[in-house]
Image (cartoon, rainbow, N blue to C red):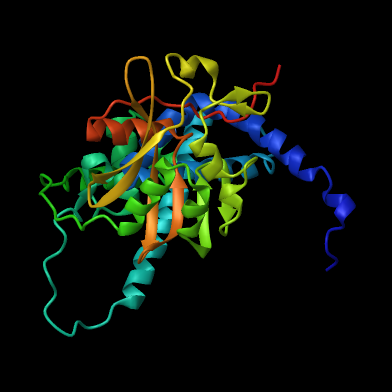
Length: 334
């Protein structure tokens, strides 16, 4: 098979990017509800945002292969999200069974949080189809026929899933222990607040991945510090909006164009980086980051700047003031 020639690839990226932005423009009004559905299926805001992003990507690709119009975009998105999540859940359970080995000593008591997440309402031990059916019926109010379509099954199977699932509601959440924050997070904050890009990138492993969720993924140590396109350089700088895009002006009302301040904050069984931006009525969090560390170095950073649903959920749970930046990072086309 011959490789694509350079002239064949020329301009293709921009064409795809334009189509992707047009697609997101159309589906943006449904993003909060899609995230909410994914949040009920998954066990954390991070997993919910991943599922929402993957659902949109799958929908974008699928749309290009359809020979008919999508009659119900909301139900169509729910169906794609349901299928993705059910497939992943079944695969994960299958892999877990394959990896089980007899314990060398008596098993320790399970994490008390394990039986419960899915936005705090449904048991993890529900089958994927049971949980999806209960959420679609009891939370989103879909009819049995609509649920059957979203789950690619029959009305009878939906009724059975609802009957089983409703009998397995979660017990109250119990407190859990939290490990101390990795030293790499404190080091990141110190370097960030000193505006020292060299120290920031020195914390990254050579195979590190830095991501602005839904926008860009950078590999290695050099890309995040690029003064023109790097995510670290962009986060240190004040928020802007220009011909290249950025945060819409209406979402920047009251914002003082200053660089943010980073703090480490405990959240559930982990720690986050919160980024505080000055406003006329005081500092507010406008983004959160998750960090995966290996010792004193960083393997992965995920910046949730353009995920308002995640920022809202995390900050409200932490009871800290916040502002969101919207989903749009590209300029409005007139």
